[in-house]
Length: 261
Image (cartoon, rainbow, N blue to C red; front, side):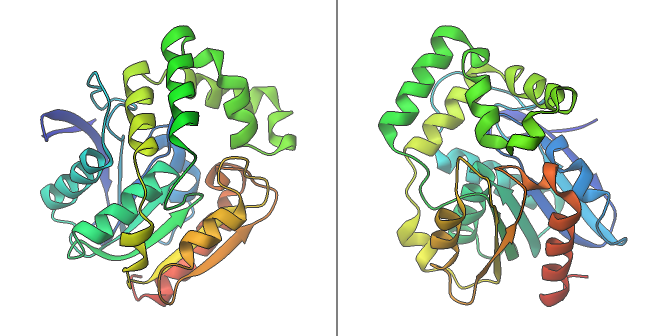
């Protein structure tokens, strides 16, 4: 178990390998195990860095609302601490928002980025306020069925055994962490700053994503000069879970394009 204190919180991370660094940021309601299947399929010789976002996994979950600036600062501090400047940053959902913010605020840290199942703006503040209130009142379990239906394709949801682990991960996310990060998403609009980016970027979308549909991912990807979007079929909001081979192949091809492997 690897821990480091950054920005006043204890951050849980994994740092494996010694090659070109690739940093992975998880989605709301998950932890860095989200990437297990993809990491196992990547080429040898990479330095794989994963971390639990503020409020998730084994990272501290402070009380109160978080801001996207907090999450971006956490990512920057970890990359700086690990000496992983020039990394390719892979972010899914809120992790993709962190990637966009990091590229805008600390372009010296990123060589390229993957924006998976994310957008420059996700949902409306009122929607997030309602979700936060519901979780505060009844816990994440009160919303988990609806969340899982947005996360995964209908066929994946039919496999109750496969779904059980993801339900447990979601429902065991600290309430303060889930609500804090939800507040961060609610206040974030990155359209202007993302439109000024020019680093190599690959968007990834799932055909059955109920949270950030393909058109939403494509709209954000197209803000960035030269970026393109890759569509993964038979996958929802977490294609790295449902179609890890397709996700790993897209990521590997992009790493080769930017000379990172």
